[in-house]
Length: 244
Image 1: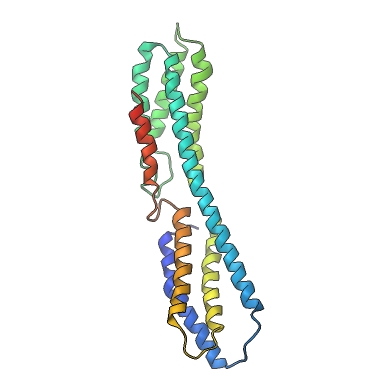
Image 2: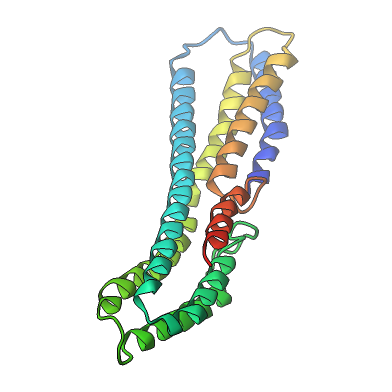
């Protein structure tokens, strides 16, 4: 179950409506003020769920950036170790590396988290070329010991990043977040004993919750909303410009 960040915007009218319904029900019943213990427990549970969901989203967002840095370092390390190959074997591989870095750009521009076909093809070409050159007569024996493991790390990190893109809390967590948002709005409206309800506080509550849930989903799904992490491409652009 996948939630778009824009689905959080539906909370604003829904919460305002539920606040009004709760308040209207309370006025019709004309009951005496009840204990706020249950009301406080509901809001405490909602606050904990919202806080943990938000903090988890931020942690995964930071993990994306850390993995980006790791991949950049892995590519840079493998590129530097091309010096272990014979000089005549290096130019074609250096061009393949530049093409490979270009293929790793724009990963956050679409909702797809799959590794591009261009990236897969370049990985195969680089690997086969390096294996052949490292095993050729007169090749440096250290090329097999140092270059191949670095190349393996460069390829493996792409799968690691792909899995990180798909690691999210179960959809039921976000569903529960939406349900509790509406439930808390209804409880808050029911707790208003005054005949004249303050629209300012009602809208402020609904807007605050809506924006918080929206920000959480934006951070959790950086490919689907306004947050795209496009600035992370600068790392690969700088890497591509640094290799010759």
